Length: 319
Ligand code: SF4
Picture 1 (cartoon, rainbow, N blue to C red):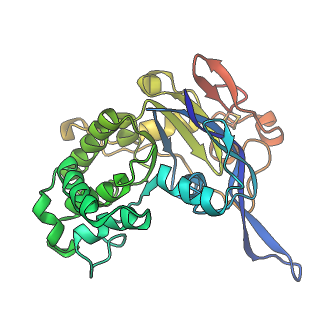
Picture 2: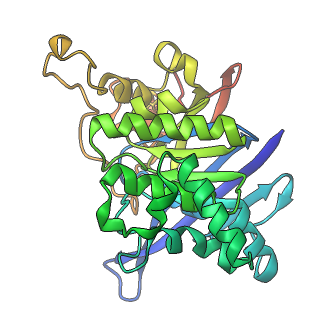
Picture 3: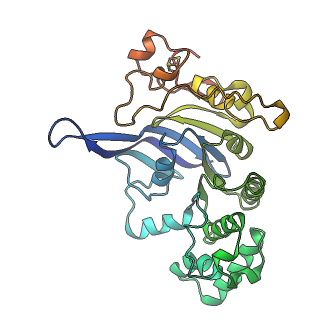
């Protein structure tokens, strides 16, 4: 059953001034994105920094307003929700950010931080305290940790506190925006395991945003690859390695480091060239200046996202 649907979503920002007086270039952070997310599903969203994936996450939870397009929750359009309805949405959709420290107020105890959303929704003090103890246990911390301050915890533990707070109001969808990127490799695996366990236990849906394809592949049911404001490929995670067909997806896969250090060659065939300026995306296929398979038609005609297999969508003229 579909929980979230995003249709032709667009977010343009006013960029720097152009060469003509009064003219501002438009930064096309998100430029016509369409996807659906089922209840209990994890959609991994992967791409280089600056491709628009974090903006897309903030648009979904309505922390930013789209320039155009629609977002639907269980078939109902939420793009125009304000007031009471938007408040209700804040309960149903939550977001976890990358930096576990900056999202926790250092002057408040962990208990006060986790119970804040409950207080905002009018939950009584006693019930809040019980819920905080439950949440801390759920994320692998101790109920007594409620009396400590954020600086008394490691980076991984602080991210557990962020997860506990995000789950306080029993949301249906959690947008995880690079939640493990700032953590050490061993801690990263623990947090990914925690997120995976919580998803199963609470039937959560995740939009899991990361530049780390290995982390996305570990957690996601399907993977969406984003390049310069557009999704270029969506496919089931189990087929990612063997079936990804877009030249950009394949380049990202080649750049994933070999887990066994003895197998590492030191050669990283990452995508050649710099990401183009999102205020001036290339004509035709946006990936053509960096694509080893580009031909004349790629420089002129923009490919559309079309079905090439079961659950597999691809934006490329050829691959
Ligand atoms: Fe490369 Fe052309 Fe496909 Fe774009 S449309 S990814 S340039 S082959």
